[in-house]
Image (cartoon, rainbow, N blue to C red; front, side, top):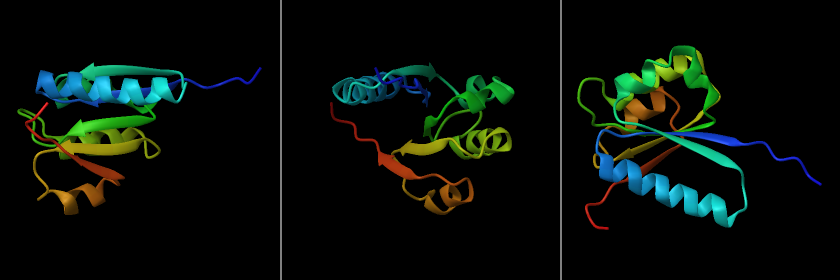
Amino acid sequence: MRWMQMIKIAVCDDEEIFGKKLHSMVSQYLDEKKLFFEIDIFHSGIEFVELGPEMSKYQIVFLDINMDDLDGIETAKQLRSYCKDSYLVFVTAFLNYTLEGYKVEAIRYILKCATN
């Protein structure tokens, strides 16, 4: 029997519908691949950064860029202050943040669309 590590994933988006949709899509994909995972949803950058050093427990972080109070770029900077190893994926309706994303070592951008 092969031992598999659980993948810990954070989804941080202040728009509940997009957070739930992303959770569903990622869950479906990982279920199909028969991987063990846990996904936590955060509804603001502030809620996520309040974890402090615990932010580093997530191997993958899906992060909205355009959030009220604390935007995704600043949230990513906080994440990087604790952890350089997490895979950071920006989920956004705006592509004009690409250069800022490189500064926090984002690996991908996923473009939000308004359709279901």
